[in-house]
Image 1 (cartoon, one colour):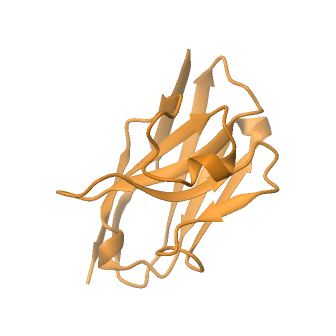
Image 2: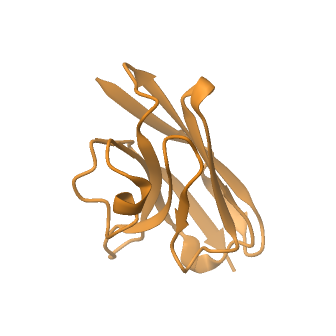
Image 3: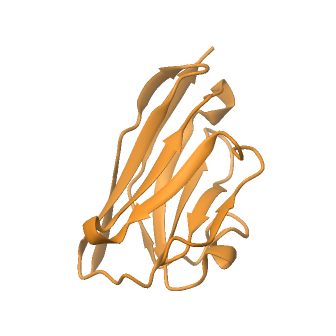
Length: 127
């Protein structure tokens, strides 16, 4: 009943920035924790960032801490991922997820068991 649609992916040079958006449609719930995951070619899906339903609790993977910022606008049913100081290692398909669990739970592992997933948006960072 909930659809998540990512946008904002594309090409960037190392050191550049991109902002990803994830818009929810259908019957949604403001109490959902939201998060971003990514999967590079030949690699397993990994956690990137998560945010609690109220936006007061945030988690980041060590690999993106200090470079990426997650935020949400519940009035717009949208979560964002601002990516700065991009590295070639950030190249991946980025997926938005929503779950009734906590942001802490979402931060553990590769996002298995999440209630809803977007189709993904490709981010490519050149050196």
